[in-house]
Length: 273
Image 1 (cartoon, rainbow, N blue to C red):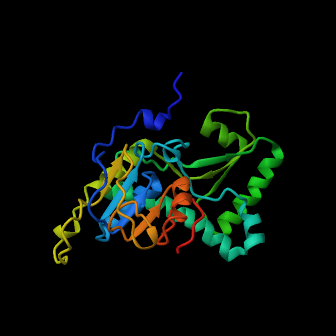
Image 2 (cartoon, helix red, strand yellow):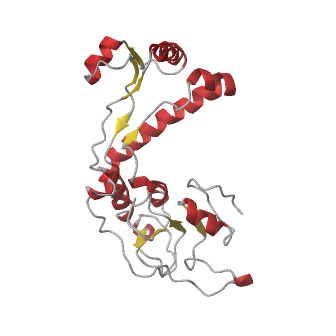
Image 3 (cartoon, rainbow, N blue to C red):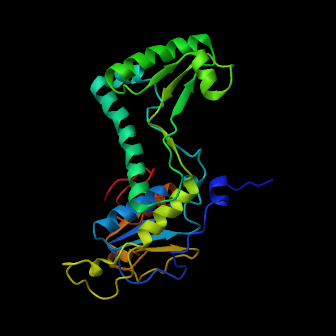
């Protein structure tokens, strides 16, 4: 029996990183090579920043590589309930933010030519009981009227034709949702970040001091070399870094207590110093 994630087990290896201790200087150091860290690295690199990603294991080897493979729009909570709690305008903004997120992933896959099988296959919320179908019908009505006219209410007969099973009492189809191979997507993100040219290679870019490493560098397997203590005994994880970006929850909590220039982009609850 295998206990490794299917996405990680079937993804190609990432070969663009180095395992030697981190050296040189960088504008931003990102801790964690999951979706958050790699997306941040690519976005910063596109804007001309020099970036180093520190990863102790493998690319997307933790939570990013152990999920259902879905890239869904819509909200987990009932839209009518959200509207009652937050107001219709705020609920609509939240719903549309998920739409924009799926669009952003699709755009990134296309722009960077990431071979991860991204497909707009849609998702279906199933009615296990007749009463569930009645609630889905009310949800479909408010969604189509207020925020998403693409949703479709499926009768039991239509759902049976869709999924090949007669045991459910209908469903609600969200055609904008997608699926993809999460391991291949993560490796593709890492490769896209690693192949970005160094800022000095960009036309019109001002010369930077020597010692800047390639943009960005992805490190894994070893603890980064520490610099000498600075004022007050503070030690940076990487010499010359002006920002530390904790893209992993555990690492972010530890770094927040050590470094005041924190830019929170991951799921950890941090505040900029």
